[in-house]
Length: 332
Image (cartoon, rainbow, N blue to C red; front, side, top):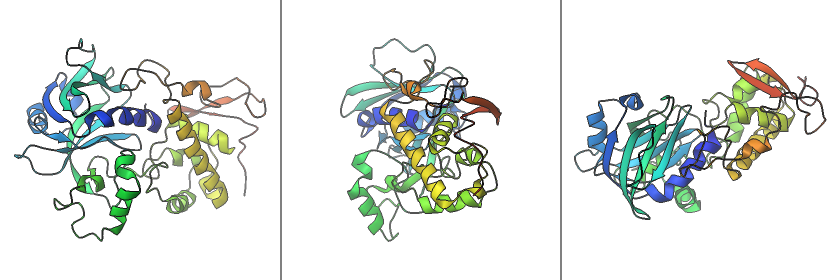
């Protein structure tokens, strides 16, 4: 499943194209890709056509497009794209041959590229698109990452000085920045989010009574970390996947979160992790972080640190990969 780096690569590729774009046409080619939309396909199409996309925003592994509908629909909306196991959002010219597994087609007039097509392609149909109402963020900060134009010092200063009066209302021209789709509102902030509150996350992590990898995968604690990047972060921090969370010191927890950030940033710099043709950016190009993996998928190979063979063990219908020498379960 795409994790934070893969989804951020998609978001970053889409943002300069869709920001300010007007939706001119929508075709739903497979109703199954609207399974998270509350309503029929006609409702999905009618509310999208004629509206304007504000941006492309991400929180953890979740991607959405704040959306200003046509005058007939005034409630704040977002077009939520869930990539599932194999979903892709690809940029295409209007005259391109249709992608074989395209499920939804959106035609937009982009301020930067003119007429362009967004193709939602999904082999396994675990992904989806949906229009969803938005709600204000609880902390009044920007809901997710939307690039430096919106989440730089100026935008954050605006959020910090907002006392709450008028926040998230029509009187605020950038209200959508601090609004989040209802379907995403239960997801915690990710470690690369400017509003990520590390002391609070550490306190909640240490209060749990579970293995540390299970905690890293809990999207209610912190988002964006899946199996690949959990294994890589734990290897980098020398922490065993089954290390009890309550046995971690605060200092060790801070090191672990620092390694999570470094691993995510490195993966971002390399375009994400592509093991097959399902993991591509908006132009269909693969990432190459798979060449930098130290633990995940490296079972039987020598640990890059100590030479001990990496082992693979069953974990929550998946697998954990770690070095049995560098990553021992430790007491305080």
